[in-house]
Amino acid sequence: MTPRTNARILTDTIADIFVREGFDGTSLNYLANQTGLGKASLYHHFPGGKREMAVAVYDRVSATFTREVLARLAGRGDLELRLTRMAQALDRFYDGGNRACLIDVFSIGGAREGFAEKLSEAVSYWVSSIARTLCEAGVEKATAQMRAEDVVISIEGALVVARATGNTEPFRRIIEAMPARLLGG
Image 1 (cartoon, helix red, strand yellow):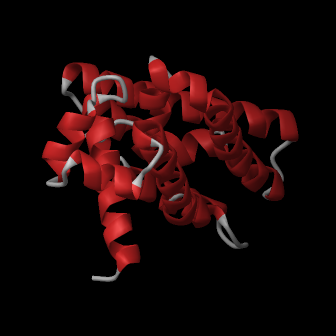
Image 2: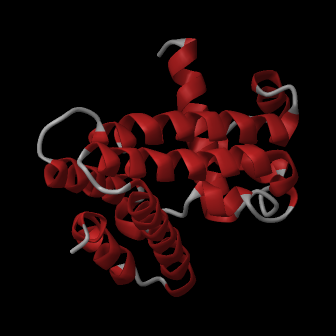
């Protein structure tokens, strides 16, 4: 493995820990134990400590979300197919509703202070990506914006419900209905 691959694997591991345990609920001791690295090694990779780890996680997850989910909207062609592909990618990204969203994880507690602006930008980018795609297909701008916001709210809410109840069915319903909802059906 290259050092770059190792850094990616470490960041992905830390992302999984933050998603599972929350930012505030994760101590450096716990991170060291779960990654198999000592605290000194973690500080070697992330001299800024847990906050720097969170930034690396946010950047990695954001890039992955853009590449694996939002990229499904790109191009011309059948809008329903592109929306369906995005829905399928969301389902994979959130592991069928079993994986919490970092927007949720980083929007509460100690992480919020350093991430409020980034989180706002991430949600805005997600909504505007969907709305722009709908507009390109002829949906009126205000309607496209409202549909995109409603779908993002539904997805995020379903992820919170899934985490709180252990029931991923609401998430699956939202994902399956998403293309039709965005198309106005």
